[in-house]
Amino acid sequence: MKRSILLFLLAVVACKSGSTSSPVSGAPSPNLPGAPAPRQAVERFLGAAKSQDLQEMSIAWGTSKGPARDQFERTELEKRLIVMQGCYDTDKHRILDEQPGDNGKRVLRVELTKGAVTKTPRFTTVKGPSDRWYVEDADFAAVTALCKR
Image (cartoon, rainbow, N blue to C red; front, side, top):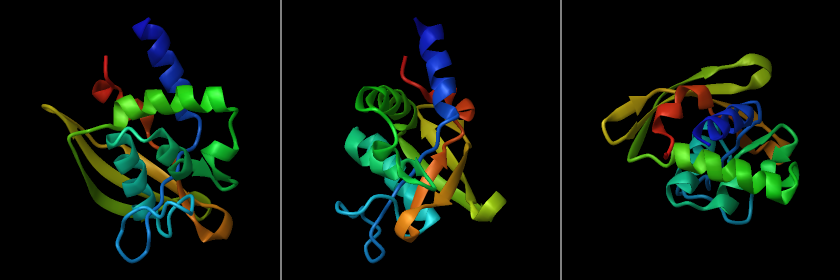
């Protein structure tokens, strides 16, 4: 069972992720998917995972085409989000740096801590419709030790 879940999670990594926050307060905007900037996209994604808000995760995770909620069949989307939520629901996180990525993407190195375990995945963000940023890839392979068992 654990092996099946791990394989499913690895398949999720191939998919893209996205996040959003309002430009003034840094809090997510409930009406808009994505985020106005890469850092806010990561914050929105991680905040949604922490609060176990799959709907919020589905509008923070995405691709250049927009939020994941508009790109997956609902049952498949929910399965992927539940797996990701169990891995990215951490005790604390800290964005360490942001660098340019390929094709206009931005890559943020984030320190995630759950209990005594700390991992540093690279979150790749991408600009989508309406100049909104999404977490396209959350470096799942780097966080498997944080996943709920």
